[in-house]
Amino acid sequence: MQEKKESLIVLGLGTAGSVLSVAFSPFSSLPVNISFPLLAAAFFAVIYRLLSSKEKTLKGTLRKTGSHIVHLGVVLLLIGIIFSTSMKLEDSAVVPLGEAGTFKSMGYSIQVTDITSGIEGEPYGGYSGSAYVSTINFDVYKWGQPFDSGQIRYISDFKWQQSYTETYIHRGLLEELFVAPKSVDTEAQTVELYVRKVPFMTSLWGGFYLMVLGVLVLFLSDYLAGKESSREDSLSGTHSSERGSQVNEYKNENKNKSESKKKRASKKNV
Image (cartoon, rainbow, N blue to C red; front, side):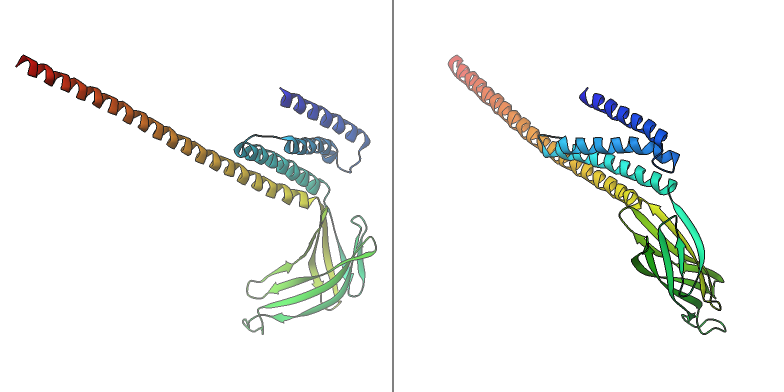
């Protein structure tokens, strides 16, 4: 009854938060405005239950804890999915060597510091290598401040007659930055950069790993419960065996007494 009451309170707070969020629109996405207050209420409710749960046995503690960890993982996973799909930003720009491309909506700018191109790999056909590779080095600035340095590659494969890329990914606590080359002009020394910023990817992956951890804890709880049950069955079997042995001994004793009486009676008749 208490858990049902708490669930209704959490649902009510989340719903009220969603109504206010839609009215004031703190986020740029309607799905986020609706779902975030509900998920935030669920998150704090799960944390509260996880910290306040008390069980007398290790098996019960593991089962409760595992269940709450799975629920927490589901909430974080949903937060990551909603934010990453609804608030993802992406853009592209042609950036010459030595200059910077600015992606204002993301708060990042990327300066290309070096472009080198050449044939690499084992000889193939009439070529001295298997692919033509352009390597681009760059510096990343976030809100005008130095942030990171990276490298990407654009590879044209002679054997398979196709092109593919090696990308740059920076995973932070609140967002993920992805940079890839769309094309490279070796004569003009320019590269077309594709840049994508995805928020809350850490929440998505963290939620997934928490779900796995919770399931493992539940498996451990079931394993301990199975061992305890088998031990109780073993003890019950031992007790039953002892009782059966005592009954048999009692029957044999009565049987021996009866036979002894019969023998004495037989002797008297003789």
